[in-house]
Amino acid sequence: MTFLGMPGATPGVGQLREERPFPDAARDALGNRQLRANLANATATIRGKREGVVAELPDWPQLRAAGAAIKDDVLANLDTYLVELEVFLQLLPRPSTGERMNPAARRRAQS
Image 1 (cartoon, one colour):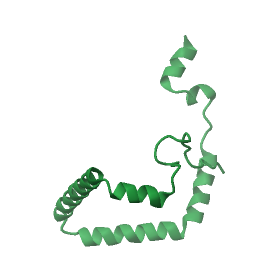
Image 2 (cartoon, one colour):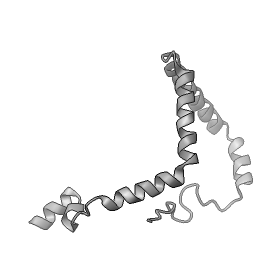
Image 3 (spheres, rainbow, N blue to C red):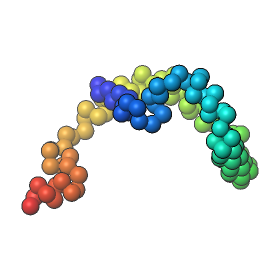
Image 4 (cartoon, helix red, strand yellow):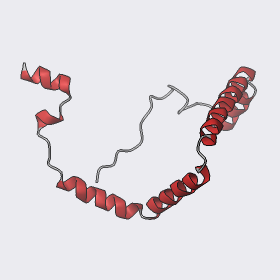
């Protein structure tokens, strides 16, 4: 089975690998008025759009319950589904090296 792992980040780049402990950085971020205003605006926008879409669906509670049931079933049987997927993938024909190339690489190889 292939393990894809977690994406890495360059040390010191972005917010994934901060030098300061999270509680200290969070305390400073909470004191940033502009950041809090931006977050409040984004949250209100997202909630408003969601409410609008939900209002268009009269059977929203049933759809939500059905989706939750599907998710619960998949999680409860994930091991079985993963084994089935692995078996299925083994049955697929293996592409040749040329078929695996992206179109640009294939054109370069043909010229």
